[in-house]
Amino acid sequence: MKYLKTYENVENMKVEVLTADEFRDLYFEIYPEQVNLTDLIRYFSWNGVDSFSGGDKHNDSIRLVTAYNNKDILGICFFAWWQSSGNYAISYLSTNKNYFNMGISKKILEEMFKYFSKSYPDDILTFSGYSIDGWLYLRKKILELSNKYNVDIKEKGIEYVADWTDNNRELYNKSKEEVKRLYGYKNYPYY
Image (tube, rainbow, N blue to C red; front, side, top):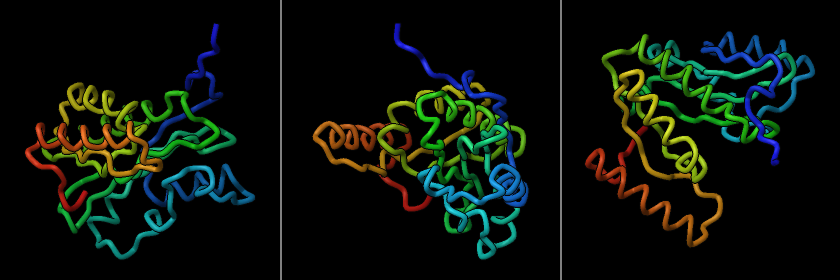
């Protein structure tokens, strides 16, 4: 029987909604030797965490829904209000490369939807575009959580493609068709 990896196999995992300052404190607690998180978590950038140019509403809304244990940051979902679009949006959800395929992103999404439903009950949660894996493996959970927590969402289709195979091109096109069918647009300019 094939061994199934799940988040239950990650020792002492916690998932919390953190401010930028709380995230920074957690990082230095877990990594006193300061590892490069961009090497571990694909879409992570300190530029978002240390944003001082986005205006007060943006900076006050920054949240990093973070899965972690005593030895690693396991995954991050970056959320904020964006002045350019006037929307609250998830900019990225990314898992530590050493913890892929364990369901960590799904646990992070659950916490994100709980937080959003309580903090912004009358607002729409928007998404930056999906990666191929995000569309295939997380979108179903996102739609499920949207219903469970009564959160209106706006999605983009697939935007991040690392390998343009025929199969990925077809999936990319189908995602655009699905988004247009659901929301009435093929692309929207901001997330």
